[in-house]
Length: 415
Image 1 (cartoon, helix red, strand yellow):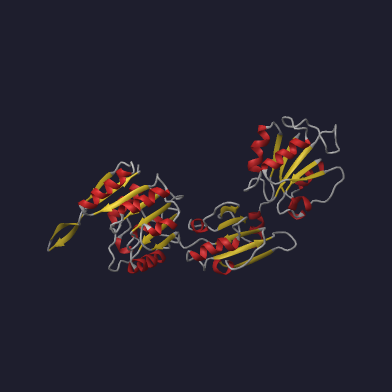
Image 2 (cartoon, rainbow, N blue to C red):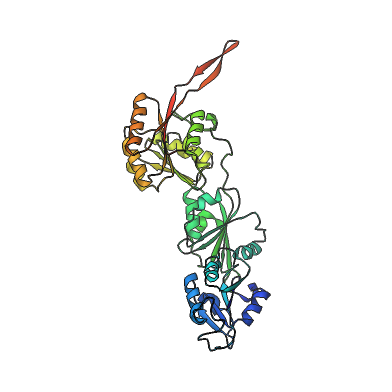
């Protein structure tokens, strides 16, 4: 049996390609989601079977083709016994764009079926046409039946097209944006594209977050205002400081180098102070949680967050380690202040993720010893780095070096 995987666009006749029509006309079996099958005109001698998951589709094919490797090439119970059978498996949109064809194809090949894939018109193409703008510079993201961090996606400098569905519809994604401070971000939703009740709704993320949309919807957002692009160790003058202690430029650069954060990772900054380390981490990570208990420092973090467009930075206001219980597991953690709770904070971090990378700042010998003991107690080899920075300053017609207090970093699980 030959199995052809077809993309049918929206399922409406106008979005089915001529090539796909020819395959549908010559196939004796058509398998797919009930919605798509219901939109195909009935045809004598053709059997339509409802199945959605790759496993169910394969099972139906095996039942209908005699169950052998690739089938017998004949229909077992279709009323077409003794005749060659070509089966069409239909998918919405394009078979190569977040389609079920991706999971079905290797299963068919394992079972020896002859296969062919034919493209269709994707939802991104349909929405692009409706909006009258090219989609070549859009980021294409699926939030259909999977976790999706809308804030992280819109921070990459491009308009973002979200394929939605399941638990994450346009309103849920827009709510994520609004909660992060991006309520004014322009967005548009396409409902039931190229179907009788299609609609395009434009607004801001905040406005769309409160609306209900059809299950067959897509979302386009404009990019968020960008964070500064700079090597690690941003100038101290970039941050609003107030009277709260701040981790200085060269120390920050060393912290980011040791933690070596990637764009898919979650970070904690415990004892965040002004948020300078948090914000630099946010420029590299997917999501950052700044943990701080001092009201004045929390206000500075909020102001610096907005100043630097660090939309993926969340302030976790409260005392560590209690507040850490509610945070998602971190990949990397900087502990800049512990208020005597260093051991408990480290316990909370490593309980969430035993492989988390830690970097602990210390300015006293006692804190260095405590940090080493804490890591050793967890079976982690501690690495100690001393940073001694001296800055030149004018002394009359000459210049002297003025030394900053040395800072120690105690790192664990870092490469």
